[in-house]
Each structure stands twice: as structure tokens, then as C-alpha cells.
Image 1 (cartoon, rainbow, N blue to C red):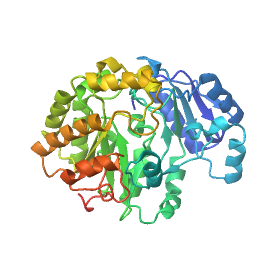
Image 2 (image 1 turned 180 degrees about the horizontal axis):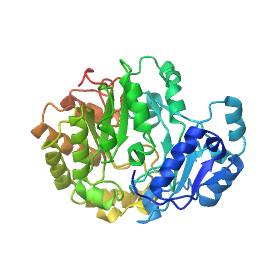
Image 3 (image 1 turned 60 degrees about the vertical axis):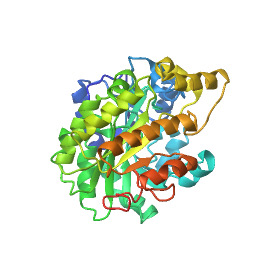
Image 4 (image 1 turned 180 degrees about the vertical axis):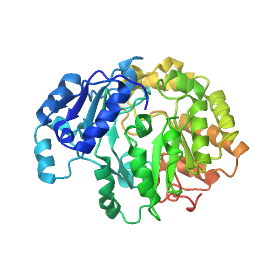
Length: 407
């Protein structure tokens, strides 16, 4: 488990009543060298949320280089009456599933198409935590980690999620955190990977930036777990993704897992347009292909921010001047720019074309895809990728499993 020291550590009353949750919490407390866990009921947790301002709407970079986080040991509540009673205490308990609800969520392509004019693929996604330790400046997670401890119960309820979409084959876990940061003490990989190993046609996808993979190497995965790394150039790691492992460490972790038989995918995501982005991306792609053979790469440019959020969180002056000037113009105009994309079509296309060209010059058979991009971008770049906005493989697509069309 990563070494970190939260400001405060809480355990919810409903988690404290579950012996398995208490055992897991105590194991993680020992790893932190702490013994000051505070039990809170629903009203107490709502008060802490307000006092500590866990959901301020800022990005992680706003907190500065020394990020102090609170930690909540929590548990899913499966009894509807009990859950409703907890949720009734305060609307704040709905934030980051503090009440113990939301073990899975639905990613809706119709919403993306209608509201952002982007192509995505509907899918159910699995969750057990909110909040991350990597401290990436652009991240939307605030100053709290909310960790669900009743993982065995979550595993046993997974057939309910499967029943919601019987044809779905791939399940992303977890895009609201990085569970690998908390392993092996947390035990999520140990719980989920062997379970999916017994599934004949369903795959688990771990979503990570971490190099903390030793615990994965001997797990019985049976080829049913994929691991998708977000890989960034070293300059981005050093300037933006402050608490995450470096580029070479992530590559080494992916190599170790590929050698252990896991399916390995990469996301160049988000690509931050630093002044040196062209050289940085070229160096990253060469270093990656020197050691690794990913089965799929998805590309994504920095976005999901309003101008005021970007300026509060990041050093915009470190950007390529053209990207910097667009950011300044949007900020000075008071634009809100809701939705997925921040930078203009032309600038995003330049980055995407550069990545595609670099990858195809080294490994032309490696499948490449776009993440939540516009239909216009797909029309212009899709032919060179051998995919379209309506028929493409991506790292977390519901049917983008090994051997599918496109791979």
C-alpha cells in the first residue's frame, strides 16, 4: 500500500458493525501506523462533510503540492430501508456514495451524444472507492478518500449488475479511484480477480496509473482480467501528476503484468499540452514499445474542466503557447465551457494526429482508438484507425474484449 498520512480517519457506524469491514480497516490502519479511527453515524458524517468541505468543485491542483486528505472507511448498505434512512439524513451523504450506495453506475452514450456531440459506449461500471492518492492536478476528486470495505458482499452482488445488461462483457473497475494504490491491504484485487477468473465470457478491467502490482502477479486470473494503464510522458508525471509513479515505472509495471499473462492496454490520457509535448510524446512511445506490446491504445486530450478550474489547478503558462492562449481567452471571456472538451477541434486534432503517426510508424498493427471524441473528429481520423464512431474498440468498451472485432 502507498505510504500516506490522512489528516483524519473515520469509519461509518454501519461499517463498524461488520466484523469483516473492521478487520480490513484495522489491517489498513496498521499499514498506516495509525490507531485514531473515529466512528461516525450518518448525522456525524454529514457534519464532517460540511466542516471539511470535501466536494468544493475544485480540481486537485487547487490544494497545492502538499495534499492533505481525510479517509473514510465505509460499507455498502444492501437493505433498502436502512439505506433510505441513511440517505434521508442529509443530501450531502449522496456525494461520493457516502451513504453506502452506488456499487455500480451506468455510462450512457445517449447522454454523451446529445449533450457533448461525442461518441461513447454505454456500459455498467463497478465501484468500491472514491478518491485517489496520486494527486494529479487535473483530477476532479477532492480532499477525501471514501473506501468501501465489504468487498465480499459486493462480489456476491455482482450477478445483479450482470443482469442489468446480459450482453455486456467488460466491466471497468474503478474510474473514481485507483484501487491498486491501497493493495494488498485493501484486498480488492484478491477479491475480484479470482471471481472474474471463473467467468467464461466476462472480463474485469483494472484502471490504474500505479506501479504497485506485485500483489497481482500470482493471482489466478485465467486471462479474464485486463489492466489499463494511463501512461503519460515523464515531463507530465513530474509537473502535473505529482503523486503518481513516473513513466518508466508504469511501463515496468505493465511489462510485469503482461509477463504474468494479463491483457495490457494503455490510455494516453489525458495528454497535457506542455511546451515540449511533441518531443515528450515521441520519447514516451519509443520507450513504451521498446518493452511492451499493448493490445490497444486509447488517446485523450486534457479536458473536463472549466477555465476557472484549469487556472486554479494548473500552470497554464507551461502549456504550448497556442494552447495557453486559448485557455487565457476562455478565462478572460468568462466562458464556462461545460462538457468533455476544453481546447478547440484543431488543436486537439493536431495532438491526436501526432500520437497516431508516432504509434503507426513503430507498430502499425497496434489498434488505436479515441476516447469520447466528437463525431467530427471520428469522421476525420477514423479512416486512418480502421474504425468509426459507431464501430470501434476502446479500453473500456462493453464488448471490447480480447478477440473482438477491431482487436
